[in-house]
Length: 56
Image 1 (tube, rainbow, N blue to C red):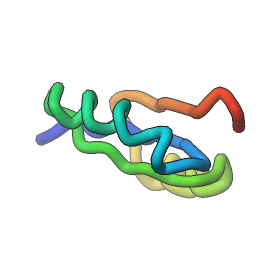
Image 2 (tube, one colour):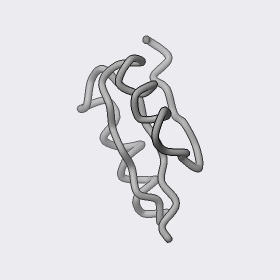
Image 3 (tube, rainbow, N blue to C red):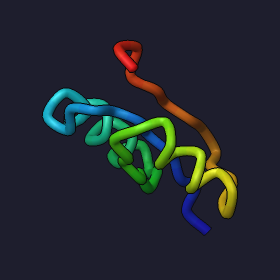
């Protein structure tokens, strides 16, 4: 099973390099634009890590 990371970033362009690095390291990445969307994901899944854009 591939570990996955939940990434919360309002601007997908800014998250691109972090996402690429995580995927290169073997993680699947789920990108959501808001904290509310992240909470919905966390209600049904448990990521290996959570990355949140500091601007949110």
